[in-house]
Length: 288
Image (cartoon, rainbow, N blue to C red; front, side, top):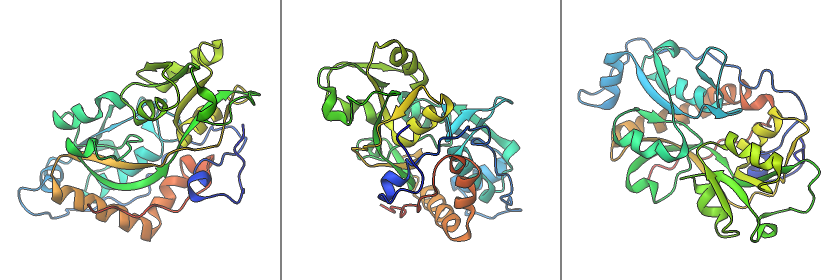
């Protein structure tokens, strides 16, 4: 694996720095965040409705090591999951009152629009196209798109080496759109885990998505794959919610900024992705 901890690199590259270690604890949950008792919100707001209901439905990935991976009990674990718990706690909702719904890249907007979830925390890149149909709080993390190759492959050092070569990614993701600038030979599937078989067999030469996702995959399959560690985009992860729900978006942004200040964001990171990745500086919230 080409990531090394302790390198003097940019904040974006630092987010992908990886230790060559097992990840038995990388999905550990931090349930120490206190749940607000009887929080009060303005009548008619989403916050008031959720607090009164005492439960929340959160969409997240179930196949993303370090960020959202289905645990032994069926619930997901990872950094995105912990961010969801932080938000729920400020609404007075305990972790056991969160309903986790699996979301993949292609269904995140429909799930929000149809009311199937209240929020989505799922390695969800904020961009202008998506902001036309859903709103975003955050970002709460900044990643960068990179490439995963077979261990020992030194021929591919960046996307420029992919001309006309087959690459696997997820349908409906920003990664699919970005890699199309370098190759039209794209195999698109519904989850990144479905790209690993084609990579092992040589059907594709690389898998592409955000560096932290690839780092988690490489860590869980030690010795098989390497992350090129040459990110070529910036991917600010946001929390998706219903379009134009300004009060709810403001509330979530407030929760994020408070977590930066009181250390709970760092605790969430270090209890999950921080078991494998260095701790980055949280990005500034964009209150657009």
